[in-house]
Image 1 (cartoon, rainbow, N blue to C red):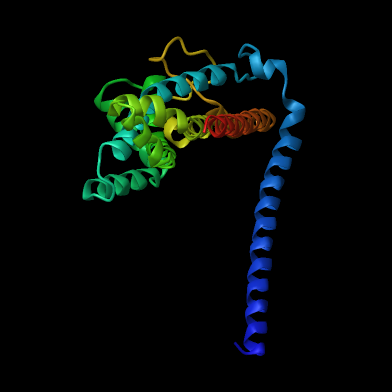
Image 2 (cartoon, helix red, strand yellow):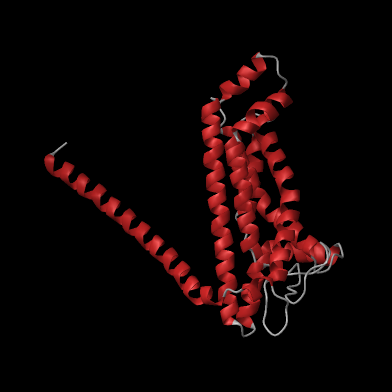
Length: 283
């Protein structure tokens, strides 16, 4: 290679490196700007009345906290076993590269890319109207379960595929059945990825609003009695307060939501590292 061409190649790669670094700086700057803005506007207005008070002269997010908890429970109870079971079937009971696998993966990836408002319309037409649930937490939770299901399936599938084939073969050599191998060897080794995917799914449930506007009714002034009651969530309270003349409370609710989402991501990271170290030690 000529000296001039080699120099141009070095300059080209250096330019690409600086370009990617600039893109990283811009992304981080935008993220930091949003977080700082929300904290400055909302942190001074976070109070015990806002968090746990009764709805009266001043608004409170206590119904939203309860409603968000209900939605997390409903969506995970439905989506977790179906998603993990589907991933086990795809990785352990089907041939790699088969036409069925390709079709299912295309369908799952397509579902993962559908805008959330489309899921909201689906939940409204099916659960609110067709099934007669009305505006309720159960209808919103089931719709959220459908929405996060592709994420759980793909993340769990990748975690199962990362388990070395030699571990399965060693278990079979010792006389273990297919089912025992899956539950005693494969799933424990993939636990970190599975737990992380579930916790990140919880974060998406907490931050979703488009789906819930059409399914749970956005009742912000009273606690839901049960899963069949209408309710609200933290994301919906941000919208409600902002559009009804409570900008300070909207910003404060945004701070609470931001802190909870960050906390969930930190928990997912810690659990992933803990399980990962445990797996390496066992290996």
